[in-house]
Image (cartoon, rainbow, N blue to C red; front, side, top):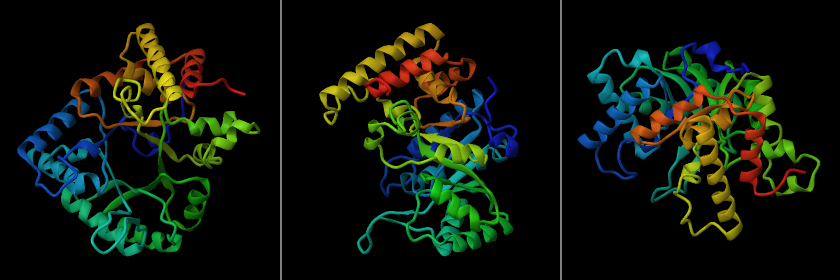
Length: 330
């Protein structure tokens, strides 16, 4: 089945899987980047490229900017690397400090300042894509449009998108922006499946338990806005990391165990690793989702790309979905 993949229209060589750089650069502290941090980034990028992943997702806040810094060292080492990859970064989240609370800032001046900071840390003259990281309740679409126009005119950003925004916010922004929104990055995984539930439980009492999502997935599909899935590997929930998580109640713990068992069974059936099944579940959806992986385990980076060579059957896709939900569909 051929799925629509909007980014292919703009970036014909874009990999279907994205590498998320949040785990690079060391800790979330003010310690400087170390040779070990640089070595890890080099190994991660080299491994990703070796299996066809050429799209790298950053944010100005990742490890307090150090994740971006590590890439500038790679570009110095290999002057041809920048043109081989697609580079995306995000802005708008501001951390709390001694004077201010943690907040979002989509003001014109802050967007421009953030992008210039990212470019300096990355050691590049442009971003392929800039995303607004979170929806700022005080955002003014006309002001954002001015920021985008300036960044585009100066050659600092080629394309624009958003992250964690619903249909109404997308429509509001689109009305004022001079350029189309290319991307909407949302948390989507087998564990975080409310974006599916909002459709399957519409007109049923189960939908009352959902936070509002509306028609966001459909809106993106109709307007050729590429959906990117952060947290695509479910943060290790089905690969052992959460089995000792004290925040899981008995029912949730049972769901995790059942889903993990089914993943193991399907991994054997399709002759791939379980992580690849998690990615394949997202790829099977007709929205053409682009999963983001953030693991720094080199073997795991390689194993997830096995998802690209399989297609889950309709029956297996639903088996995973219903098992992860923990109760039957309406």
